[in-house]
Length: 204
Image 1 (spheres, rainbow, N blue to C red):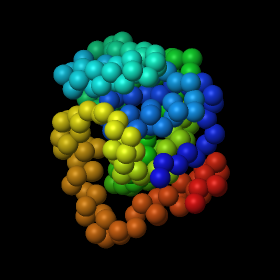
Image 2: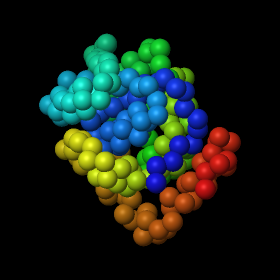
Image 3: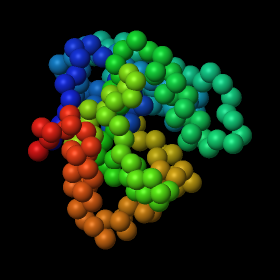
């Protein structure tokens, strides 16, 4: 079941990529709210394919789409992941709306492991500037199930399984081993979320 950890404004934006997470979030939220879709174009073939999915859904649903792109070149010292993330959030932070991202409980677990391996275990914040993350108590499988149940088209980005990217390496190489050690790892992290963010006090 999709759960919200906070009350949402009537009018808001949602960051979309065309992937299953953001398309489920878009379809879920737009049923009771007035939304604008925000898509950051990474100028890659996969990004272009994702934009087609987003435009198709939004055109059929009467949802406006805003598209952003890079404002600077990549610094040689930063990874491609860092560059994409920095430019995407820089653009989103300039927008007038409160903007939802589809970060979910599985993301929280991966972020916590990633931080722990670097001596700084942490969890995604529920809100940073105008960015809000209302799905942190929802599992990825719940978002996948929502798309299947409601026949929501989404795009499978092949780079999401490329383990040269650190996030993907953690997801596909480390997570299976971590879950062997503690199959209830998601419950552990969820308890940490409840403790850290008072707005999560209503989560069951």
